[in-house]
Image (tube, rainbow, N blue to C red; front, side, top):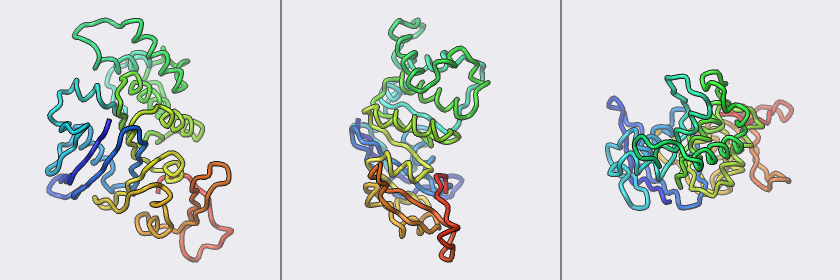
Length: 269
């Protein structure tokens, strides 16, 4: 499944949020979207999963305009995990995950043994099996996020779009979820706030700043001290981690900070 945004521009209340954005997510790639808060990451994702139609440009899936697809067709092709888990009624975790099967059902069709198997498997893979009969509303933010990822998995779409999937998660579950996503062998586009996680898991990165693409390439190409300073406004030291063999970033507050005051952090900037 190939996802492409070409010359996408979006304005909200007369203010340009995105300007002439080009993004290519090729089949089987894990692509990260990084940038400061307010840079336009979420707006770009919304334009891709049909919530905010671009004022200019086109978003396509395998060459088809996503806004020409029916809701059912779109749901069979791409699954979305948003930052917010807006569930108005009190469903169990199992019921929430089962909703991911809706795109594959006819009207009033009952759940099948295959549906039940897929739901159970998704709950196990996201570490939520023991919560299956719990009220969704009773869960923590991180637990809700894992449930929404499980729901996306049972949707069986070939493209997965996630808006900060590790937000609110303890580090154990951040790594667990990212390992899971990396091993799904799906096409993945994820907005990420943690640059070290982006460096560890992504094949390709797009850096967005003030509504424009500031850079794109592999993590090795993109994550440089100069670019991070320009986009995020912080100083860094970057080295290759001896175990992961991936770039690892140490952030510190300014040019005159002593080496003893530097802090290694994995947090949104």
